[in-house]
Image (cartoon, rainbow, N blue to C red; front, side):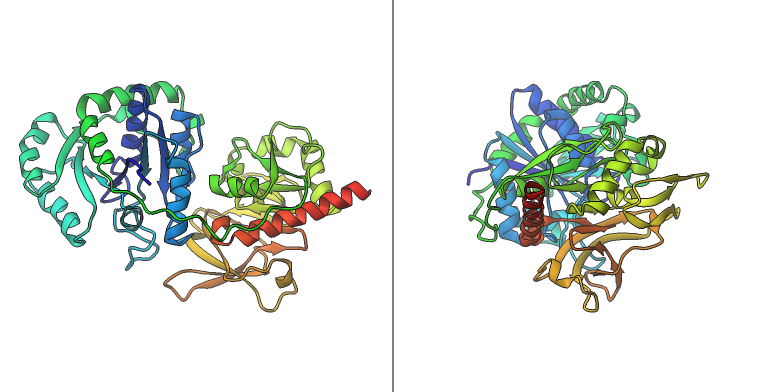
Length: 463
């Protein structure tokens, strides 16, 4: 396929990837161009910023979660409808799933998708040292994919003096940004704050786009994107068959529950499920006539008072999941919501919650588990037959809360390390734990969940 595309990458986190990506996306929109946006890796928050600009979901592309053919397919099915595709990188350009590997790095994704890279250098406080810094990234891999450089945090005078030296390295100097603290996005313990929490976020991004137009050569970036080679894309043969009848799945979606992989939701739709969105914060009860529920991750710790006071929703959730045995998936924040109680971050109060999981949750003040994992059914539990799980299911963990009972139905294993632990509460119809699941790593998991929901719908019809 002919897909104009670029990646915005950098040498480290904190270099300005999200700022420049958001400003560039808005600038492209201002020019009347449609853009498909993607995030390298498992992050949920950066795609939410992308969505703020275009109003359409941004997708994650991850070479740990899926094989290379699947990555290209997932990118192409969205990119083919856009004038240009923009991928925001993750961490440092060569940083991957382990300290000594570039697997799942921005570099690997750029290589797999043959995407030209615009390399961001946080050059504040640097002079000539910028040149060997860039040279190192260009030469570490002979096929680095880096086609242009943008300097962040420098003056026009510094940029103009360094520009010819940068281009002597064989890459384009595509512009710079001065220090602009007014356009920086705030952070919290899981990364950037969500865009909906930033006052006048759309106006802020529009102002940022004007700066991008002023200081960065967008025409050159567009030319690089159009020069991207054809991308070989093959139809997926791994997609499971559709479920045989009507299934409606409730999806928790509000400020507290907003971490979802867009392709997880799309896969359920491809299987024939209708997704019904609801708010555990504001709605009084679960939607009527649903046959399953998904509670994604997010920030329930920031809204415990509201969640706790919505007793009709809590009672509705417990009745459906614990009493009526409705199938459900609960990840991280959603898993915490199903606990009997949850402590606030300041450790001042325990809030009563849904009570589906017989455990309590507390803030630990530091990361409990962080990074990629592969989930496999625990050999000694009786739950293994509930999901076939051939080849395991890949996932990601990132949480500061702990539970008095993480579950023991599955074993989580870290890649490239001999580290494993028990996790996941799995009853016949429920699947709940801290891991954020990626369905395309094992599409049969999504199919089996949809099938459980369909079986539940038949029971509802019989009753």
